[in-house]
Structure formats: C-alpha cells, structure tokens
Amino acid sequence: MITCDCIVSGNANKPKQHEADPHAKNCRIYTGRAIYVGVIVTCLVCHRHKKPIGRSQPLEADYCTDDCLGYRQAPVAGSLWPGETSEEFGYPVSADGTRKEYV
Image 1 (cartoon, helix red, strand yellow):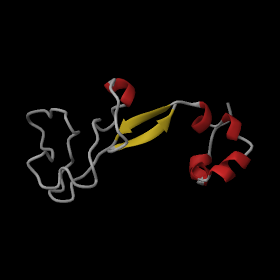
Image 2: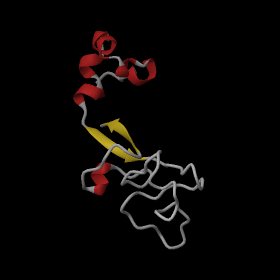
Image 3: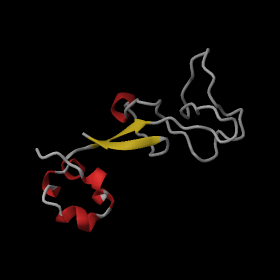
Image 4: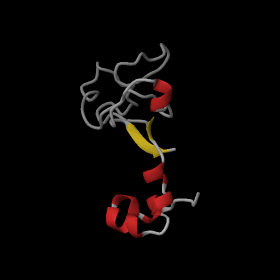
C-alpha cells in the first residue's frame, strides 16, 4: 500500500484535488475504516480537563464535571477518555471530544 500524505498536503479536505492524486485509490480515507479516538477537552471556565460525558472519574482525579457552568458548553466533551478508541469503548460515540483516524 502506498503511504498516504493527503492529510499533510491538505487534499483530504478537498475531494476533487484528492481524487486527482495518483495515490487516492490506495488512500486510507477511502480504503480504511474510521475509528474515533478521545482527545483532551479543556473547560474554558475552570481551565480543567473535562471528564467524558456519562463516565465516572477516579476518586483522586480533578476533572471538570457537571458542577461547573462550563462543562456542557463548547468545546464539548465526548464519551471517550483521551487515547481511548471507539473500538475499545464498544458503544456508538459522537464526534464530540474525538478525532477521526483511519486504520
């Protein structure tokens, strides 16, 4: 498989240019499957990391939670912990608080 550089070139967000690239037929965006990976989401009110929505946090952890006015405001937390994948989680996830990767 040819290594895809469409993300670096910016063509992944430009379908016409991307299809014109010689590697497009081998590109992971078209041939791979998408998974979501959790990212760190920082609260703009308290400046702490937001815990994933609907997930319990460790007792010693200091995350932004529903107690903060900024927890439900943008940027919105998703349902995945940072680095956790949608495959590991095992349930449907939204795109909030994640990045999409192709494997």
